[in-house]
Length: 418
Image (cartoon, rainbow, N blue to C red; front, top):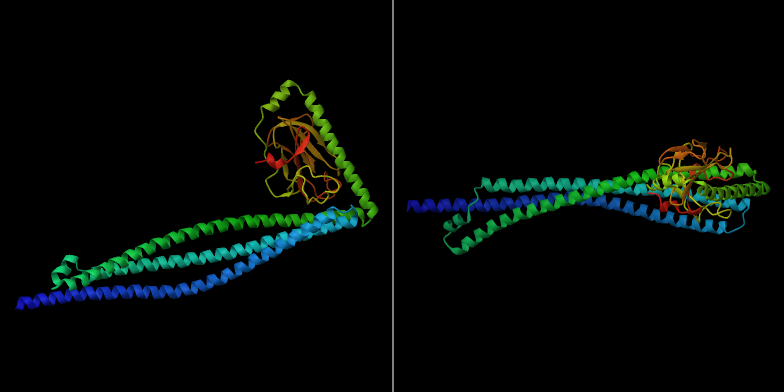
């Protein structure tokens, strides 16, 4: 009788341990969910506020882009009108206003990206907190189970007088295992989410760096637009007669350069020896950028070119600070090294495969005609600032005018550049 009483007491103690263990496991998971729920609520509100600000920045970006489209439309209208001083000043004013909008657009985009970085950092911190909490509460469950000396299924079977009580206790054990499995799955999902947010953050940081570099370029473009307008006003003294004289000089200058380039290339290729031609043919390494790759400010036959009504733009204009080293885009013979004082100065190089390159608005020339240059060799310095050596009659600020010609005909340099 005494032995039966002891067995009953042992059974009761073990069942009590299991029940207490299950009770405390439930409290751990319930308490953890309550705390995380409170923290997530606070974070969600901050994220919502950031999302509202981001949406506001995107709306502003759309508004700026609509204004830019309007200025582009007005620019095309003005370019189709007669070439007089008032019209040219309107074109320059439109370009100036558009350049200022370009700056505002990039600045707004930078603000938007910074907000998204802040939001992602907040989400990362929140996920790290959840992961730490999840790890702690899984650890607490394991410690509790060991402390309570959790019974095995066999022990539960032996301790229960009937099958119904056994099923109940077995279900408790299954619930505990289920909670642990669920916690581990949740932990893995949190880790996966955290890694995704870190990747997203790195992309946004890279995007921000590009935007900041672009902003610097846009500010330089604005300075160029201001210089261009100031140059036109200074040269014409607001006189229509002086402006027409300036246009006539610019047209003559460009026409002379174009005719010289076409005639010279044909003549030089005809006079080349077979050895020289073979040397050119053996240097087929493609083209490189003649100045550090930067913003293209005017494209080939650019519809927005400010002097489109005077002549088509047969090149790309690449932004380059005054005095930037200009390098040969490919190996070849220098056909022309034209130093025109404060007129339009340029260098022309003959290459293989019927190609030739022209480097315009150069402020200094390092090479001589008939000299053989190799790809990447310094051939001069860039220019283009109004009123400076090599800039010419009409200029759009500091840049390099870069042409590629195929059999004497201008072609799009971007089709050849890396």
